Image 1 (tube, rainbow, N blue to C red):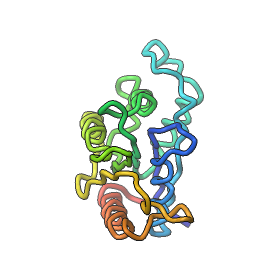
Image 2: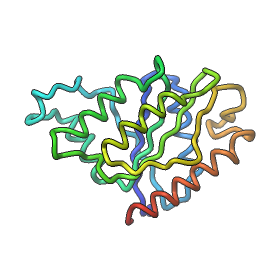
Image 3: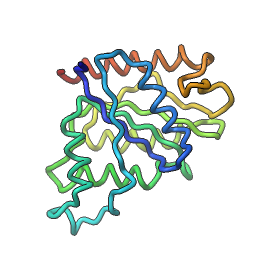
Image 4: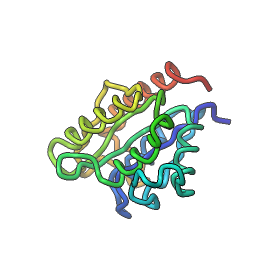
Length: 184
């Protein structure tokens, strides 16, 4: 039985999302005491402060899962040098109403993959700024700015041989980060 529950937010709704593939692959590299649960964010309504006192069931589900988790992983593409609107919408919902921030104190990891040469570097920097404001201790090193290319994933959906050691190093650091900042 796993001791550590990690929720995973993928900032892409695309059916064949590279970032969903990365989220699935990275979870396979973690030790057995870690369980990774994807959070559905595509069904959230657009954030509207007028709804803070009467949040939808999908928002309550999101906030409950975050509060119950030991940590969070954000896997984000880069859209126009920032994070996708669907991811920012989820972040906003879970941080509201003021004083009921589900993110506060939750240790986080950030990574992403894109077809661009710099991967998701700028989106991640933007996301890290938001997470700092939300009081989320976020793993700083190593940073993962992956460019999507042949061999990143193997035929089974796992991490390809060329990237395995690098990504294993990231998940090992993330596991240690969670253990440092959370109790099972």
